[in-house]
Figure 1 (cartoon, rainbow, N blue to C red):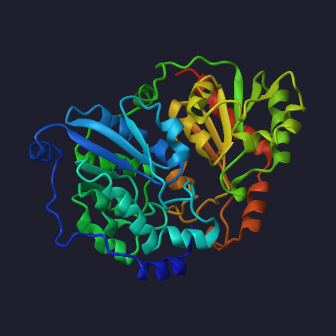
Figure 2 (figure 1 turned 90 degrees about the vertical axis):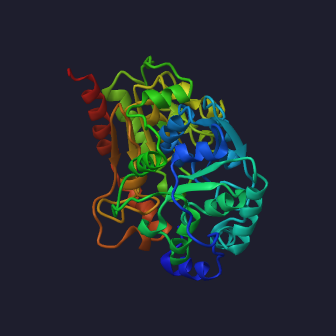
Amino acid sequence: MLDDRRLALIDTARLRMHRGAAETPVTLTELVEQHGGPLRVDVVRFDGIGDWILTFPLLSALAHDERIGTVRLVAPPAHRGLLARLRGIEVVSEEVWASHHTPWPHGGAGKVLAISALGQLRTRRAGRRRAGGTDLVVLPRWDTDRGQNCLAYAVGTGATIAGHDPMLQPQATRKEQRDRAAIALRAEDVRGHAHEAERLALLGETIGLRMPRDARAVRDLLGMPQHRSLAGFVALHTGAHDAFRRWPRERWAELIHLLLDRTALDVVLIGGPEDAAVHPPLVAIDPERVRSEAGRSPLRDLPDLLDGADLMIGCDSGPAHIAAALGVPTAVVSVFPEGDDPNHPNSPDRFGVRSAGGSVIIRPGRMEQSFAELDDARRTALIAAIPASTVLAGALDLIDAEEAPQ
């Protein structure tokens, strides 16, 4: 995340995206009448897989609405495997300078390039390739430092755009607030803070969709059976995209010892090839009851493995969101302190997991200094200080609550 000063400097050089006079608000039914049949809908996100998973209820509502003909996802290439298993939905990967998940220079300079006018132009050109091929573009999130040029893509298509009103988004820049004229279907969220799931539900209702109320719709979207079959293990994901969001390996070792001592559950370590490289010492704790599946199967197949877990424990990352979406009891070790800015991109208050099977966020207590002011070294020390015993207690409470008589 770039600080406010850098964002303000970048914003001075960014392009306005509106098309002139504000568009007249329309309804989904009116759009169908205008286009003479079911709509072709694009949903555009250039951020993380966890953000996409929070969007699954909205995607389910679109896929099951008779007024919608096709739903097409425009997403970073890294997410294609998982998104491609969604039933009745097409996925297109866009190689645009739009997020840290697509090919662009790394570091602060790279991010400036991605969200600068140059990044906007490149992304809008990608949208123009879709011109005439879509009737409605839905933007779950599109502000500068998080939505990262989604609006430029949508404007390039020439289609009607649905998204949150930037005048009511505290993190939107002034130029983006003036770009509200580009959005015909505006979700007007007057709350200063709301969880992303609630914001997306409001967007769906603004569009005119019937939003699902439980996890069954997401399981159906993923092609999963409606009921889970537990396999007697706890899944642990030791990784995270940012180094400061990773709980140290020695803490994971302590947690594994506690789990093996106090439960009858086996331990299954999950993740990608980079996670597999740090797993051997953890497996060595008890090779009979601890195994690593990291790097052995693609992201697309991870829901099938996680669906059998009695419990999921991980850092703030995509696998934790996948488990939660399936209804697995999920505990997350978060670096983000209590009482800090709820709209920060690392805040579980806005972007944390939510599971029908129960979820808990284990995080540092309130701090005098804001999280945004801490460097990576201090953030790393913050998450490292969270005891394994605290994580175990929070996680086991989820299982106890699930097993308690109703």
